[in-house]
Figure 1: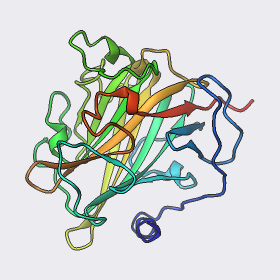
Figure 2: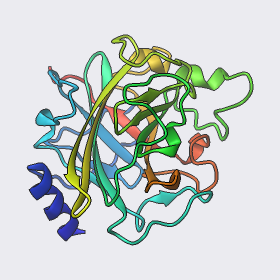
Figure 3: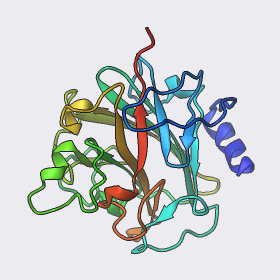
Figure 4: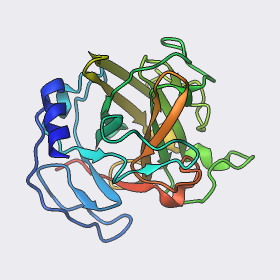
Length: 270
C-alpha cells in the first residue's frame, strides 16, 4: 500500500500527514477527543474535523495536511452484483472528511487505470445513469438510525440523506436522495472534479463535495454523528464493472444503512 500512496503523492503533489494515534468515541453524541489531525477513531468511525474556508473546486488545496483513509479491494467492500477488480492496478482511492457550521465536506483521490464517462453528458444534472461511469457516490444516514432499507416506497428515510453521485466529468445525480436535482445549490449540495493522467500511466481523479446540513433533514451538524459511506463506480469502457465501498454490506450496500460507517462532526474549538 505504501507504494500506491507514494505514487499518488507524486501524481497529485499531495502531502500526506500522520501522527495521531487511533482514538475511540464513547458513543453517539459524546465529545470527540482533541487532536491535531484526522483520526480513525475505530475501524468504522471517523472524525470530520472542523475547518472553515474550504473552496470546492476539485484542486484539494485545503486538504494537503489531512490523513487520508485508503480503500482498495483488500480492505474495502465490493458490491456483490459487480465484478472483482483486476488487482491493485485497476482502481483504489483515498478520502478525507471535514465540516463547518454549514456543511460536510468530502475529498477523494482515485487512481484508475482506465478513465471512462461515456454514459453521462458533461455537466448533466438529474436522472442519469451515474453508476455506469467513473463516479463517486456518497451515502448519508443523517438521522443515524441505521435502517436496513433506506429506499422504501414512501422514501421517508431519504429526507435525512440518501445517495449523492458526482461523475468524473462533472455531471451529478441526487435522485436517490430526498433532494433530487439540487446539485449546485448552496442550500443543498455541490461538487467539483479534476482529472490528470493518460492511458499509459493511468489516471488520478480528484473529487470534492459539499453537502449542506439541509440534505440531512437539518438535524445534523457539529457535535452530532451521522452514518456515512462512499463508493467508486468503475467503468472501463463497457459500463460499470466494479463498485468499491469504504464500508457496507456486500448485498445492496447503497441502501443498507446498518453497515455504513460513522462520522463524528467536530465542534468549532472555542
